[in-house]
Length: 260
Image 1 (cartoon, helix red, strand yellow):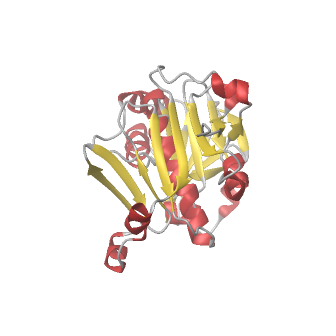
Image 2 (image 1 turned 120 degrees about the vertical axis):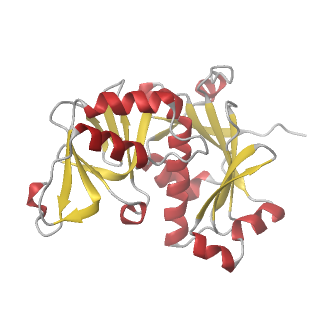
């Protein structure tokens, strides 16, 4: 029996993050090729793929495949689940399992390099593609947490990091690496400097109000895309404290967006 051939994609390869996606060769990634590239993953050559080390502490490889009949049933769920929202985080056989209803189910074994995502066999409509983007953001937020990378729903515009609620973002996210002093978004990457401002769009107000440092720390701590039963990582907390000393933050003005 022939060995399975995999296509590997690395997150922000030029920055060296040991975080990867893999698909069976020429199987699923065509459907998601634009999405994968939009989110900052770059395809590796066969030689580059062979150099991936599973023994490094922060290496994470997410295998993406079509769901089996059993998992397909779990992904579809029942209509009664809908009142709890599309996303569920649970524990199965001592492993955290994340489910996005009608899109996919992802196993996130703590401190292990190989993770799995089983996706619905018939992903096609817009809501499901947004759901797929959300799942990949959740993956990144988990995989990069121990490296202190912060992930938020939102976008970057004119050196402003606009943080919003998930439903407002349609799955678009901003990743902030305080240690590398860089911000990643669908638009590419931005240098993290003293001119960066954080705009809260999760709660619109009539008058612009600047957040003090304690409010910035609290907001950045509770608003991340990171889902975990144990809360955010120590490395994330350290990054948030550092970031809070270097950025200014304020509320989005609902009737006047000229402040952007």
